[in-house]
Image 1 (cartoon, rainbow, N blue to C red):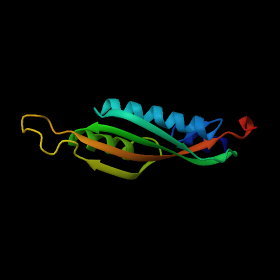
Image 2 (cartoon, rainbow, N blue to C red; image 1 turned 45 degrees about the vertical axis):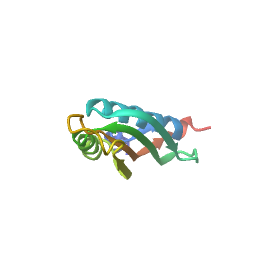
Image 3 (cartoon, one colour; image 1 turned 180 degrees about the vertical axis):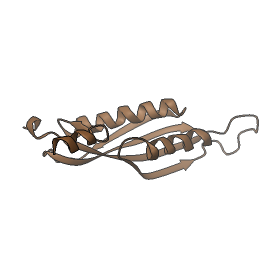
Image 4 (cartoon, helix red, strand yellow; image 1 turned 90 degrees about the vertical axis):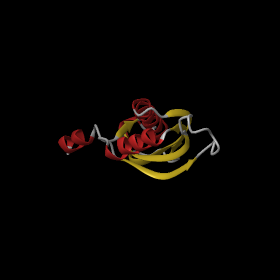
Amino acid sequence: RRARFAALDSLLFIASSASVASAALASALEDVATDTRVKVNAMQMRPDTTNRPGFTRVAVRVIGVADVAGLAAFLHAVDGGDRYLAVREIAVSQPEPGAADSKPEMLRIDVLVEGLGFIQPETVK
């Protein structure tokens, strides 16, 4: 059992609480956003409200600005990364539809990403 759990260690957000696991997911998404040239304007953590040992879902809403290539790279990194992550919601809008052709097209994105966390039994009080 311990060997199987150790193999999952790099795939899950192992933490002492759901809030800490959500913060770890937010940090990982911040790194992905930086690597894919997505400018993050806000992040909203949505941890599971129950704080019992075991598996839990954690979610983070990422609100930002990117071009089409940056958005595609972000989604590919989230979906194809080495963690158990899933995009649950996505909203894309163009803030300036009448912008000049010489100006790069930027999109406003709102993406809800869910991950799988594990709350360690010995640290829950």
